[in-house]
Image (cartoon, rainbow, N blue to C red; front, side, top):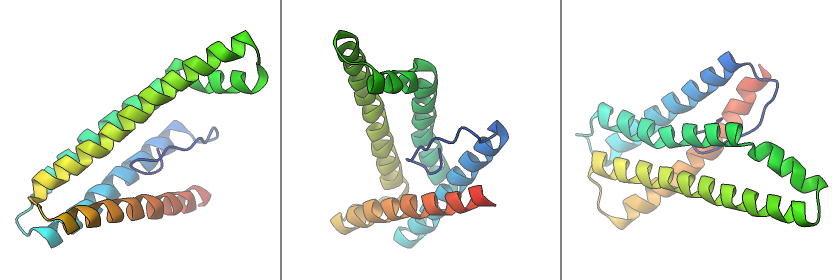
Length: 152
């Protein structure tokens, strides 16, 4: 997990570094959202932002475990090589798995939005637009930043 809602495969990454990158990802998301929350509402509590990010990211950890232990990666490789009846069954299983993972990921976005909305008490439409745009900009920026850390 190289950003709060982005996953990438790196087979050469040691488990210690994976935990470090996830920690950096979560801590930077907390810091970013807390600073943004202070701009919207000076009375925002730090613990509310921490809870928002951690709860929304807990689902992503479940998604990663599902991908790792459900065999979705092997299923995807089988789809490249198989055709016919076996390929169709694999395609149905893979599509069903992807829809479940996509649903869980979307629910993570809903949780981070609702938690942030509650923590900052924002109600105006332009706050919502600003939150969504800044969250996606943060995710994109963070992916580039983490990739630079991988090089070091």
